[in-house]
Image (cartoon, rainbow, N blue to C red):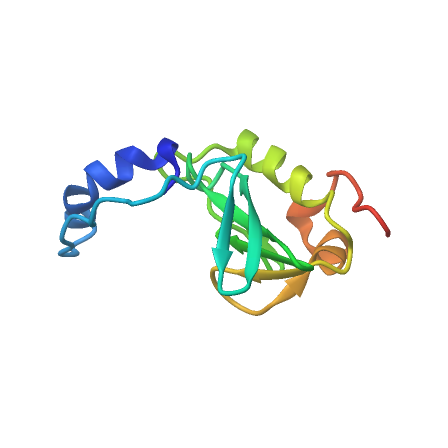
Length: 136
């Protein structure tokens, strides 16, 4: 978890109950996913990028021509910013940061199909007005 998401961990059960869900409190985190940092998945190491907006502590994992974006960037859309603790201004900063990745960087979002930074820069209405990616 990212330290900025501590609220979600401390209030998981009560937050879920407001949506009619029953959730046990999550186990204690063993690692903080804060920037600068790296996470290793098998033989691959990824940089941790703090990309808030959808959630205060949202992170993406970047490396090897990939961006595992979670709920920041989707094919044709972005994560919601109208929920409690979301921030549209921080989302715009996070999208601008993702736009600095090479155009051919593949994006693996938390929902939906794989896309690329170049495709999203060309067609995603939420990416309009952010910096152009390197190599485009």
